[in-house]
Image (cartoon, rainbow, N blue to C red; front, side):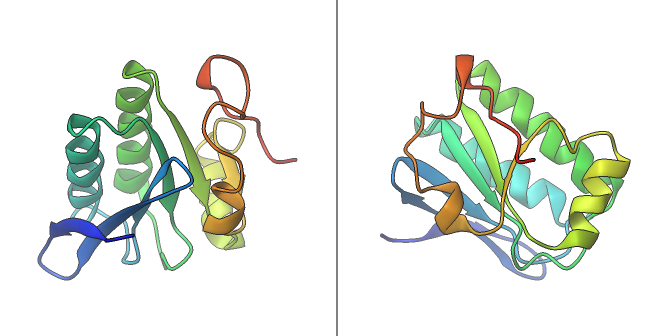
Length: 134
C-alpha cells in the first residue's frame, strides 16, 4: 500500500487505498492555505478513476470555514462521479464545527480510518449516500 500525495508549503497531503476506499490524509490545519491541497489530491485521485473516499481528519488540529467549504465542494465533485465520502474523525471540537456548519447530518463520521474502511464501498446506503452515525 504505497502512499501518494501533493506537496504544499507546510506538509504533504497523502493518500492510499484500503478495502476499496481512497484514504486522503489531512494532518495539518485545514484552512485557506491547506484546503486547496486536499482538494487537489481528491481531484487527482478522481481523475485516476477513484470514486470512494475517506477523508482522514484524525490528526487534523483545526478546520475553518474555508476547510468546510472545501469538503462540501469535493463531496459534490465526488458524488458527480457516482462516488461517496466518509470522514474519519473523533475529535469533538472538529465534529462540533461540522455541526455548527449544519453538516453534522450530511456526512458519515467514523472514529478511525479502520472503522471507515471496514466495509467496502457500496454498502453504505442508497445511491452512494452515507448513513449518518447517531
